[in-house]
Length: 468
Image (cartoon, helix red, strand yellow):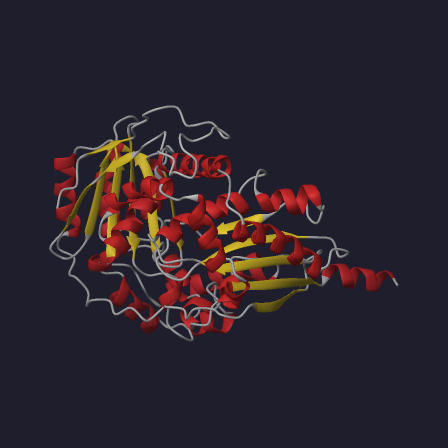
């Protein structure tokens, strides 16, 4: 079904300055900027979802394929398999042997990469417009005819195992808190296992495992093809049909139950990091359902509590009490609020000196959260949060690479079967009131919905003992 034919970023007015008062107290502030993304959206007979977004301002195209398979649904006893498989599909296909597709991109002066997230795996390229057909051909061959054999599997098992060692096992604060928090905050295995992969599980993967995984999750009917930029729509549709149309659909994907029960008691988990020089503290709160009023409110709470040096927790923990030199966190640490489709946490994390106690940090955070739960935020502060989130949205969708836009629209195609639904987000945030912020904070920032993870360092203690 056609949903439009062009990208229109409509800048209706200059954004309202931070601190400007809205027209009426406690009324939803009307957006001072409005954007609209109008993709062409349709399905091939084999189920492939296609998102086309024409934008001729720059003579380049962005091509991305998103598969509906992420960390959450990898097989039990094969932790890290989704990430391992992402690596496998960079190793070549029948008609594009190892290195061929990469050379096509680099010789055209383009860039490419891929990633594994909670709910999808993606591959993407940005190239001059003249290389579009080659990109469509290469992605179709990757989907239909990847080379999966013992040599390729062993090679990538070694690569990924080394990546785990470098980025997690042998790295101070490795996996902190993006890998640690989901395991602490969730109870469903699909949300709570080691997404990067245990080394034993990675080494145990077989060629049969990989082939079955490809057959199950990498069919066109579990995929979205995004093409954005300077292209001829009619010709592009012919190429898509030519290269993707003959790929047979896989069996319908049977997704596991990834739901989380409502958390009713606070959780506290100790995480030991022998390489960390300083202790760290993190808290995670389960998010409301996607697209709900509270989901939008939590997005704004994230801005007010965590994001930027004007945030409440930065002011309390850094400026007022000198507990830490900075804070991190947000919603979906492996993407954004718009690019996940299951249980998720809003997280805040910090490192601190050993003389700052857990009780001191928790009490400071509780004071800030309690104020949000007990008192209405000012219209001025709420408007500032809306301006910040709107600015972040524009930065994402207007980048020259279009990677952020490709990721968001493909996620909405995968999860909602409607990439144009992304147009709803600005109105959703605009409708949030101070009363909704308070109600959402009371339900979703309550102690019973919170998990605290304490990172205990080892490096500082070991150094101290060595000096004695």
